[in-house]
Length: 148
View 1: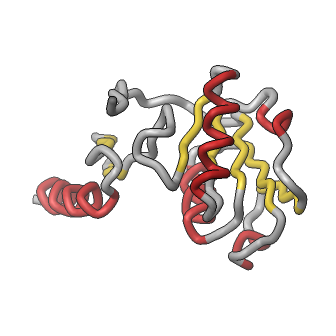
View 2 (view 1 turned 180 degrees about the horizontal axis):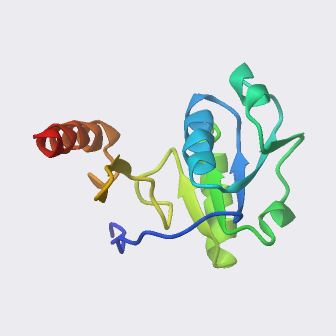
């Protein structure tokens, strides 16, 4: 059964967010979360994207992920290149009623990042049910429309 996601805009300023992994997609998620004021901790065995080390306000712990890492986290992003491990993180979060975004699955998550169009008057979130290429294409069309 495919997840049905309730669209919701939420203030994450100062909210504790855990990102497991430090690759290209994890970096993109971290940058997005920083734009909205999240307090980010990254747990990773190695930093695959050196740009992570330049991000201010991101706490990096080079070590193995431990189940208790999700304690007191508002959101967890399972962003490793190992789908089985990301699914393991998802299951821990699900059991603990914690929001989790799994980058390697369209179904084993309970929240999803959206493409966002922001103007002085609007904030529009776009989801193509897990297809980022389609989301970006619609984002570009909406952005062009709003410029008119």
